[in-house]
Length: 502
Image 1 (cartoon, rainbow, N blue to C red):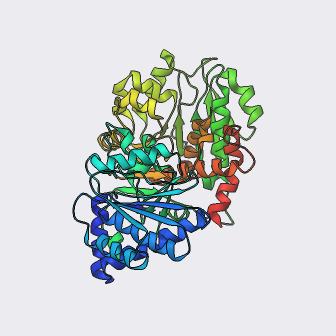
Image 2: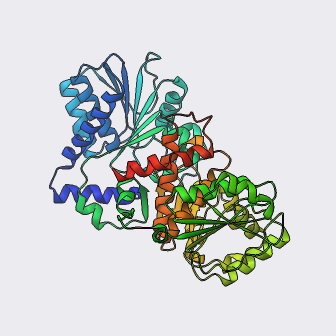
Image 3: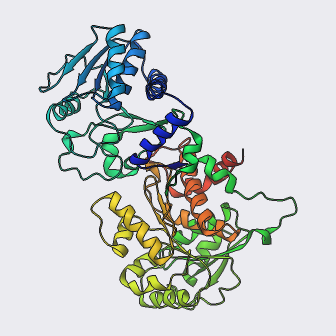
């Protein structure tokens, strides 16, 4: 799903108004109806509601929502805060609310006066929308500080007030609404996808308000949010007369003494992802462990008994992954250098391969074009430098991907894929239970298994992270976030494929 910057969203709204055609006040009413439907799914009329509305269109949405809730017998109080003139549509909805429910609305201009509410009262934040470009101050800041100290459940319309849609350089975080729920209109906001904003955004959902599809199609963006609808068309169909040779031969260079588990997890994941054949190159000390745990795997022993020092005859493999558990011994460093210097097609680099690169930056130039690297944030920073925020880390990933012509999978919640063409894809699947040992090894195995089947590197990255997260989500049906382990992800890959193949 393509999504957009806050400036572009305003343009999309205007296109919709001009080409449906629809009056801006009617588009606001449509948004309010979607908000009403979602709100009433979460909360009943037994719960009191206190709505804070600002002077712009976000406030107009809030006032329209108040009217709809009052018509459904919700007990609603409204506080309209403004320090200057209201936007045209906010002014119309203010008048509609006063006409229908004259005693509901209280207006504040220069000084905040706290309303009397119950602890069970639901607060709706409609003070500022995503177009906010400066820190909140004055009576608005006082209102936000009061909302945050109540401890009540808070629902934000479109975006929590005080939070900006993209980059946030917050010096005073007390003046950003801490929402439990955020109902975002039409698209997610880029800010929702960054860890430091999670305490403000809470659980967020996207509400379709009917932005003109042609506007969405014609407006260019390099931001994408991966959903099931994006991944399903990418999957290859297996024909009746396929054989194991049809699905490629993957090589995983993994393991060292005491780290056989990395080889086991990655190779099993490669097989479960559909690779026809999987070979593991590792030290002889791991042979029995790997072949006992994964008898379907072909094992190649290195000349060194305890770690990997050389890999020959790579031409016969359709895809190669390097890194899980290989260590950073000098012999292994030279192996990686020699291997990268003679590779002619994309590979996958993870774990200790990335640790080696972080100590030998010249290796970056040897990585074949369109290869995939899969760092977590600390690994990324060791290679590309520290970042002051998730937003700046995203920009660094984008720049590094373009400079080195590689695909960067930056692991975490809403895992980011940065492509060499400057496109940025964020994942919609996965959960915090997947923050467990071996989860990255599973992803590496899945990626090499997919690439071996003939998926191009872009497709491999997108399908891989989506399936990895989906399998983790399905694992929670039988596990908890505390008990989920990497093997559970592998064990649910079949269910994940079945979901996509329905």
